Image: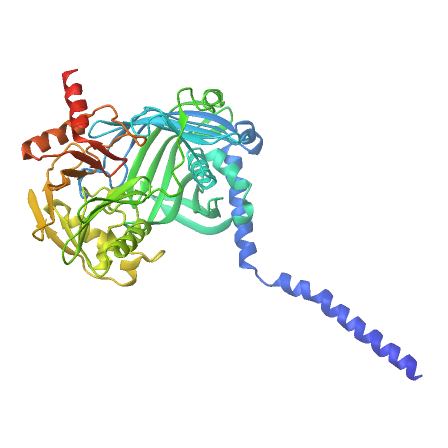
Length: 516
């Protein structure tokens, strides 16, 4: 009897446990899971958009495309002055070619910008080899740059942003990252917004027109080195059907509320024929020699005068040791570059503060690291036209990625000068010349070392990355005239981009160009 009771009790316990186990999922199912709900709603919006775009079958059939553009870029921080109208970089022969299923991407096109600049860098993503070349050979010459996996991912994704139906195909392969943000209204139109994560970690918001289902807008939050937290993205408009696929006629780029690109889809072909011809490195191009492992980053070019090379994206900075302080010339790229330079300066010249900083011109690639020096307490020395720029970037909000100045805010200390300012301690001499306006920018400063006979400048001349002088352009003639007017005795011309050349060789090239 006791044994039977024991068995019965255990059977009842087991049954009760089964009831609990079987009941648990139904309890969970009754609860609202916001993550699941968000994903399900986003997937519904994406599926409807794919249908509106032409349907998945048509999209997969149209996964090869060639687009020729009529376009003008307005890159932020490249205008004539910080508060001037946007810069205009006219694009000639701009095109993008994609073979989505084959993993092959090609883009090129010449950009013509103020000062006579004409650049065309072709980028090729190919399973066999991914690379970039300078088509005009007027900056990198005939050297080939191999693209890293990270660079490939960024280029690939940025090109997909040009083509809505291929972007949706890409998103459909990353549906686990989809989330629904809700509905919103813009310019009287209603949109459904979903978010997803790209392979490079970028978080993107996609805006779908609620009436048509078509992708109309994309956005992301970025942390700009100078402007802080900003919204970047683009808008598609004027869709029309090509072989069953909805493709826009226009796309604009946006950054911080400004239009950074006007792109008209002038010609569209649903093939990759042109791209096939460009997948291999052209004849005449060579692999760039690897930099020696022990290559110096810094060179002493005079008594207390130093040149820092190969930083960021091939930029250069000079710094000068005075009796009681250090002066830094140029603040390129971003905060990380400035941190590395400040560390190097303090190792080289210990116990002397960085008291002054100046830069050639305000363009963002030349000033992206300026906030680090403001944080250090350095005085920024500029022509009057750049004072408002320094004040504005010092006030930028950095909530996403706080930099040193955001963590410990301080007002910038700014000193302005007209035409010329000399820094000297009796033995060390640096002369600053404000030589604007130029065809490149309104306020331009160049730095002259009379003892060393060195002239340091940005963007008025840049030698080829591999050495040598590229074709002479308008801004080069302006530099030669300015040096002649100022009667400067120059032996070495040092460029923020790409290094140094002998002044006599530069001047010979300018004079030869003038005679043609």
